[in-house]
Length: 128
Image 1: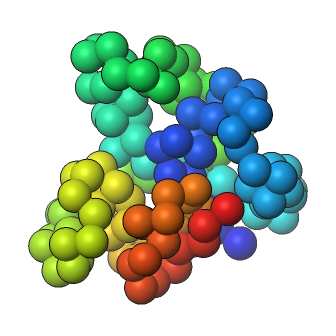
Image 2 (image 1 turned 135 degrees about the vertical axis):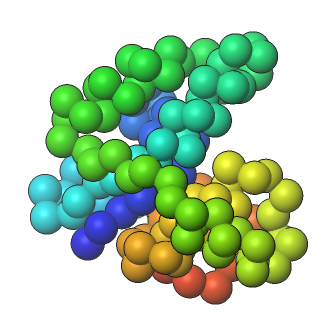
């Protein structure tokens, strides 16, 4: 299964956080799953890290490099992803999360998240 990691999941994996659920750990450690991270997540980490937001103390370059070294696939943002955001219902206000939702829908991959608000969207989303 192809899994697009929500930004907080990506951060928790890279930092070894105990906040990562056992269900998420199981999916991420399953060698048959293809793990994907979005350029949008790296952008979000860079912006929020630069502003000193709590939970975003990781260096975005290190997160990206570690993810690539661990075999994760980097997903670029396309025009179609951006267009799809416009068609999403206004359940979630965060533009980064909305872009990840759109990417999952356009690419037909499962967005792995711990965010209950994101999980309210129709589409390939799995809350762990």
